[in-house]
Image 1: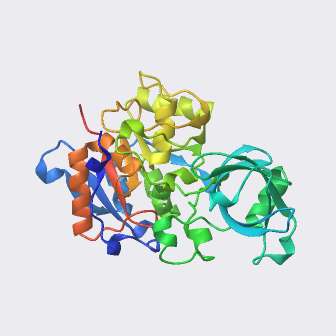
Image 2 (image 1 turned 60 degrees about the vertical axis):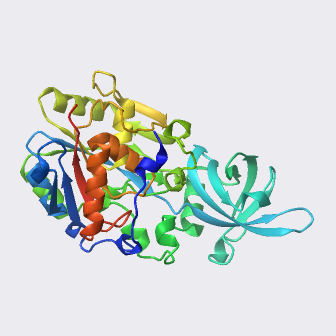
Image 3 (image 1 turned 120 degrees about the horizontal axis):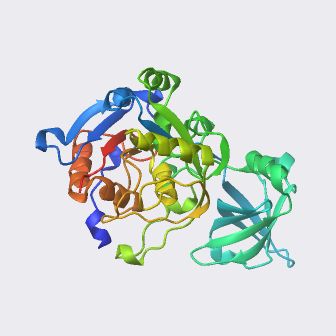
Length: 363
């Protein structure tokens, strides 16, 4: 499909720079395709979510935890040439190795030494160093750190910054508040570069309301990579290659979700990350298998969903792979109408913005 089909105009005023407070006070646009013109779109709040669910349904959350994956480094060479380079870690490949996007990558070559921590945590200066092990395409490099395992995790936590999405970072700097705001309340598995943002709306109050009506909660892990921020350069969806992300669906979670489907309950994914992982783990007949490893699933209109019945997700960028995904889920024309309504009625977009509850298009 032509990428331009997924374009739309978004005023800057609709881009949220801070989250709603409290988290569950955000708006919720309910999109129910194919139910008659008067019922397709309905304006609600996140706290209304339980009214669209029933006992026996299961919510699937991504419990990944955002790490401060934005690192500012100094490249040093034997001739004493020093150059500053920014790195965004996006996939761990070994206890001491990360794939990262570098800016400007042209300043780097294999075997360059990088030191981190300068200018922000002087006590760490000289304690976090890395070697450029490999230089790939589109600014991607592989960094081999001198530290490994938990010691490396602690050093990254000390010197790194939260990698705010470009549409926020271009308008304000990251601050200490983002370390809390850009994290779900149930995050527990460290490794993400970006938050699974639909989950940012959940609170203890909302969980209590869901528990009261008998809705199950299950957790999977997909470590969201920096590739989620990259613009699509292809003109046709057939020419786009997704960056892979590491995910995990435990045997117990797969078994529980299969039981939900068997008794007629619905699987409701909280965020596109949990949906992509569940669909990666699902067989043709909808049975969900345990899963562990990378997924580069790219969902566009025409995809036949195997397991997921409903999706709660924030509002996405024009011409993005995520707007393509929601268009595949509820229909391109339905989602174009939904986004036009959201823009005209002042919904807040992107990571810190409002949310939507999508029902799957029936075919």
